[in-house]
Length: 152
Image 1 (cartoon, rainbow, N blue to C red):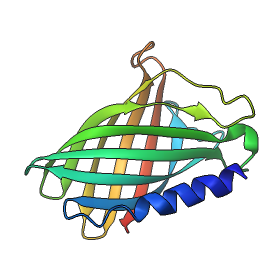
Image 2 (cartoon, helix red, strand yellow):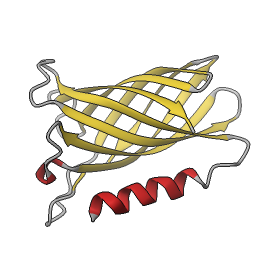
Image 3 (spheres, one colour):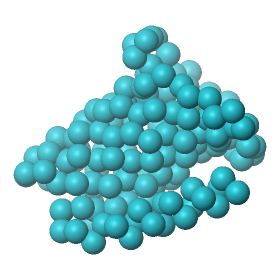
Image 4 (cartoon, rainbow, N blue to C red):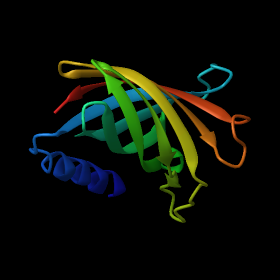
């Protein structure tokens, strides 16, 4: 039921973006710890709204769903957040915050995380890499993510 609701929310949000300065992209990717062992393999899917503010600033609210490669219900994490990016041409570089929420029956909330990202937006495609770290343990506990997506 939770998966169905999340899919419906993502589709509804994508329909809200026919404005001129908003681009919506659907992205898929992987997440790993700082050891790059990919064990367990964590998959991600998200919807990102890129809102152009002036020539060089891109505000990007997003919502990401993380799951292990077995898609077990204990591993589902919803991570809403947003970044402010500086952009020149097709490149973007920015940072922001996300808030992870475990979608277990108890809906455990995890402290805020810093997200630093860089990537390329070319034509209808988006390629990115990002770093996540908790504010409490700044750069001691790090995760790295890689995404590829396309504009809707």
